[in-house]
Image (cartoon, rainbow, N blue to C red):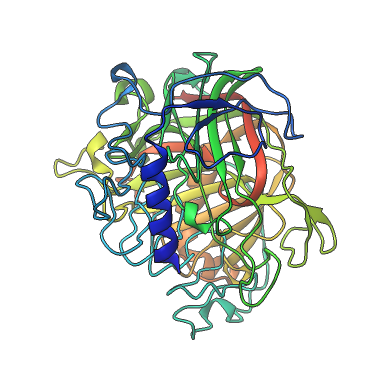
Amino acid sequence: MQKTLLASLIVLSLSACDSDTSVAVQPGSAVGTDGATTVVTPGTGSGTGGTVVDVETGAPTDDEKNGDEGISDDAGSATSDGGQISDDSGSATSDGGEVTDDSGSATSDGGQVTDDSGSATSDGGVTDDSGSATSDGGTTDDSGSATSDGGTSDDSSNEGDTDTSVDNNNGGDFESDNVGGSIIRQSSLSSGNTETICTTLSDQNNFSNIYVGDFILHNNAWRPWRAFEGYEWEQCIYTNTNGVLAGWYYDWGPGRTGINGNPNPSGDYYVRSYPELIYGVKDEFRTSAPQSETGFPMRFGDMPNISIDYAYDGPQYGESRVVDASNNARFPNGSTISGERNIAIESFFYETDANGQCSEGIVTRTGGSNHTYEVMVWLDAGAERLPAGPSDYVTDLNIRGEAYKVYTKGADPRYIAFVAQNPQTSGTVYWNDFTDWAKTYAHRVQQEFGARSNSIQMQDDWCIANIIVGTEIFWGEGNLDIYDWTITQRQ
């Protein structure tokens, strides 16, 4: 079924991109199947409004490229920027990560290496259609059977459901040492060119980029076949529009029905997409600015004090349904939601190069991500999706007066996530708080909190390659509008 659907998507993209027609619509409008490029601007949460802007279709010009960026061939699929299938071959291109059937275009989400693999979004693919390293509870081998109580593997194991007898110790208060010091680097989103690039089922610019100062705005619609079959999904990235410095609009429709016999989207734990704003090095094809400008990659042990000032709006206004599997006290069962997504900041860590340096070339995602660790902070979470199964819960933690729940993952010892319990649409995050806590505790959470242990200890001689903010989108319609995003490094 999945291979048939992906083949259909490829055929659609091959036929659609022969047209250079541009159609201007408003967010939430239906998109036809004539192959037209859809151009929109951010709405106000109602699905209407916004100024229409005509722009190019997604193939960056020479002065927009940074390395081997861009869209190639008539397929409309990224080649050098993500490893989508190009031409009619269906085979892996030299730059991508597609190495087996229906592998799912290894892009900035990581290298998928087996059949329809790569459910892990930004942290890399795992095994057959696994849905694993996201908020699905860690399923493997196309089981699709993880529910909110944890993950299963090979359709038989109940590892994720194991009662680990967590005593739910409160992790107390934590903050990194000194957050002050003189500023050594600072990068802020600013109002640059007005630009919008969209991708749809019919016209796929899935891996298009817009450069914004020291940042890359990346569309990253990396799992389109996970949309409801035949649904004319749409996702757009835009800059400098209606006061929005950078953002994205998406419509992925309803959750897929019939998961585990459930007619509702509950139980559909598959991420469709991860539109993101990149700072630093994300993969072989996306470096937002030179290392001299951002400092990334940098040795973890030499990491300066990093703060992130942010302000955003992230409304959802898709088809509504009633929550029936809540994992979030803000959305008790019986409440109504219009989609499921998170808003998350993350960093990836890597080993040094052959010379022991944190060079830009340390990142490899072609054929599988070589990262050694991922630290993720969910600024906002939906009703039902967690970073892992509830059995992967570690502890409650207060960081500078803000409450978080902490998760490690039995299915991936290179991962830790902090989920904000009282989301704020503006504020300041001190990034060292989370990386320092992870370095101190993540490898011994069993001893400290009675939780499942994350077995890998973070090392000072690793390299932190980036700071990224994005939204893992499960289903629904909405947008993420960023009004302030400033990364400040102090020594």
